[in-house]
Structures are given as structure tokens and as C-alpha cells.
Image (cartoon, rainbow, N blue to C red; front, side):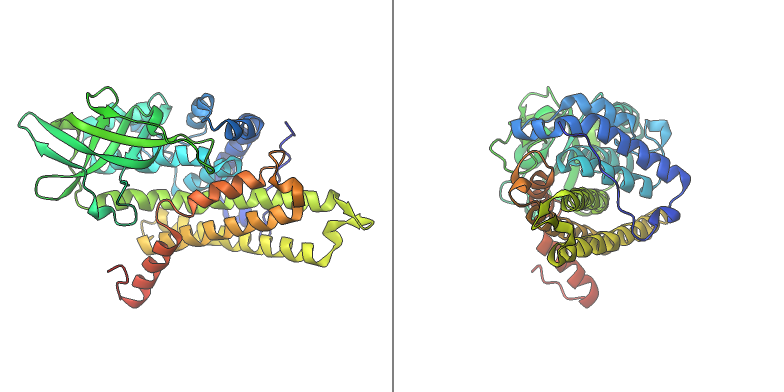
Length: 392
């Protein structure tokens, strides 16, 4: 395994806008990725295995629920800290960041925001420590961009709920201990339920043959007459707005995480271009390669500023769903374009596992689709600025 020589680009001295705590948190995550992720991630991706050995390390750097209050096992950090941690983890691998995003924003967040005090005390500390891992059940085989059309449902059986249905494309599902599942009640209203592994009729088959997020575990959540205790219902928010609130938090993390993938591709391409000799000089001396690199650092810098401002708004509880959508769409689109350009700079070497670029490129093909597709986020922005709903 080649040493991880990554150096983070900061063309506009954005570090000057961060607090000392922000930089310490980011640098701790960066050092952990270099030490514990980079040496194993290519092999894990080639084998299509999630490296469970890194779960304690993710917990140690505060990647699980960093903004969850300390009383529930979280780190009690601000939103910029959360973003910086996601940036560093995705610099290592999008699949690893997906694992952390799901745990934080899609499992811990709804329990914290929508759950009871008993649920918070029961689940959050174990999720924050990595002792338990969670998954989030919203997407269904026939309902992706239109989650309101879900058919997963539950009935009130008196002393429990009876849950039936299936969810697809679920990160962490093959090994999750708990799943936050969104289902309709008998009146068609969407509610969240906490389903635990071991409940009869609950299964989590793994999805195989992925070309993307190969170092992340993906699967299904299947419910066949699952008896869910009534105390496992999340009572404090219902309707489609409940899971969409979770997605806002996850999309915020993705907006930062994608910058990490882009930074890694840029850093790899820049270092390679300085070392690769063709026609008697480094290819970094040729105009077309400089054009690629100059455009990369420009787009990364713009994305960094977009994410930082969004983090400030999120800290002030002023960030809108539409603003978060814009950042998710822009930054992932930016990252995937940079990955493709970086691959060209490396030529044939760019497709090998000796470098991270092709793995990032394949991963980003999933990131640009999940948590709202590129097109859906464009329509969210369009709706916000025109007032005209193009979804229907």
C-alpha cells in the first residue's frame, strides 16, 4: 500500500474562517483516515466488503452523531464540525462516509428529534459508541424519488403494531442492530418506527454485484408481520416532513463529504502531473493539464465556501431545505466532474486500484443519486425560486 500523502487544498485560506476547535476536530479525523482507512480501503473495495474493524475508530473521532448532545452520548459539536468530519471521511471513501451519515443523520437524528426521552436514553448512547449500528428505511423498490407513495404499512393490533413491507438500497442494513423505518398507518399517515434485529419476520438481505460503494454494506429491509412494540413509535413528528427532515441533515453532510472526494482526486492528479514526465518535461507543464487542474481547484474552492456558509446558516437554524439541496447537488456534481478529469490526467494508471480516483468516481455515481437525485434537487431549487411545482 502506498503511503497516504494527501495535502488538503485551501486556495482561499478558508482555515482562517474556522475556529481552533474546528481545525482540531478536522485534523483528528484526517489523521485517523490516513492511519486506519487509507491502508485498507482499496482492498475492501476490491473485495466488496465493509471493513467493520473501523467502526470503533469512527466513534472515537465523533463521526456518529457529532451534534447529538453529550447527555445522550454524542459529542455536542456544531454543524460545521459535523461537515468537516464528513469531508475527511469521504476523502477516504464515500462508502465509509455513508455509514457514518446514516448512523448520524438518518438514525440518531430522528430518535433525538422525534423520539421520546426513553427512546433517546435507550438507543442514542449505544449508537454514538458504535456498539449498535443503524439503518434508515424510506426508499422502496417502486418508490424512490416519490417516497410519499410508499406501501410499507402497519396496523394497530391493540398491544403492538404489525408491520409489513420492504425497503431497498439501504446502507448498513446487512449488519444493523436497529432500523428507523417509515411506514403508513391505517389512515395513510407516515410515521417512524424503531425496528430491532431479532424481531420475528424482520430480515436484511444484502445487495451484491455493486460497481459503486463497494466498501459499504447495502441491502434490503423486509418486514413480514413484524410485531413492533408500541413504545417503538416515534411520536413527535409525523407525515412526509419527518423523514425529509432527516434527509436535510444527511444532505448537509454529503455537501461537505463530496468536497473531500474532490480534494483527494485533485491532490492525486496534481502530484501525479508534477511527477509524470512526457516529451521531456512534467505533464504539469502542459497547458491542457494546467487548465484541468486550475478548474479543479476553482470548483473545490467555490464548493468549500458554499458549504461553509451553509454550515453557518445551519448553526443559526436558518438553513432552508432548498439551500441544502443546492449545496448537495452542486458539490456532488463538482466532485464527480473532478474525478473524471483527474482520471484523464493519470491516463491508464487512473483506472487502477493503485490510485483512489476510479474508486471515488464509481462511488460518486451513487452519491449523485441517493438522498435526492441530481434532477430532483434541480427541481427543488426551481420550485423555490419560481413558486411553480414541477414535480406534478
